[in-house]
Image (tube, rainbow, N blue to C red; front, side, top):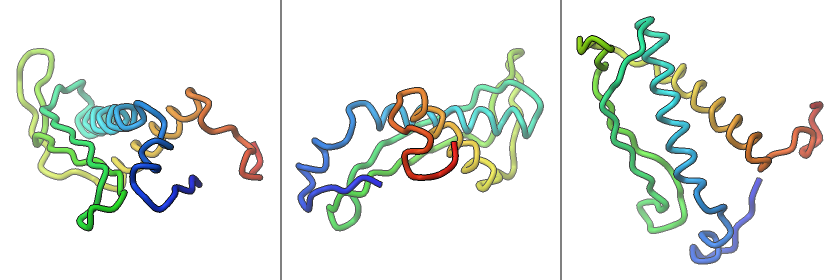
Length: 117
């Protein structure tokens, strides 16, 4: 857990540089993995990602928004439509990607929170 001071300026200075870009990259990897699992093919979807650092009350609330096409093109240029996205599975893939990113960046040390490594 990271505790921030009350004002957003202090909070933004406390956040690691580039973390938003890294997390949005994790979202993209999670979507690509989901499409691969759902279709059995390597697809290239259209993805637009936006990092938003504030909530509706202009409070610090970092989060991501993704617009994704309903499927993607394979290597031959054929579009494969995905009519339903399993949000739970995408969330699981995303969580694993973020955790792996944090481990690689040494932002998290297994055992630091008292759990077994």
